[in-house]
Image (tube, rainbow, N blue to C red; front, side, top):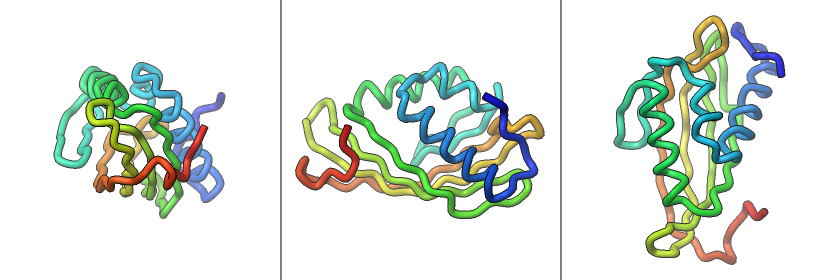
Length: 137
């Protein structure tokens, strides 16, 4: 697959968002981490960390506890090398069995090669019943 590089157009920004959604739904931490620079800076809710190694660890831990994870991302806005998305994902807490839906926003900044160097994410989790799920396999 051809790498999508800035400057973004509406078409390439939408393709970048779809590629991110597809990668995250793979739940493959190594694969997902390759979309980020070696020193990528992340904020994920109340966590701040840097680098692919930390990203891979974070994602491994995330998907160990967030069972049946399913994500949908939507392009919100874009500029030459930045994209903002809104998203929802659903998952079941491995410890409690409670189903949850997470709503949030992400702001991404890319280097000239189309690799993400900054990911800033804000989100809220809400409890849902299994019957309220939007995203089923």
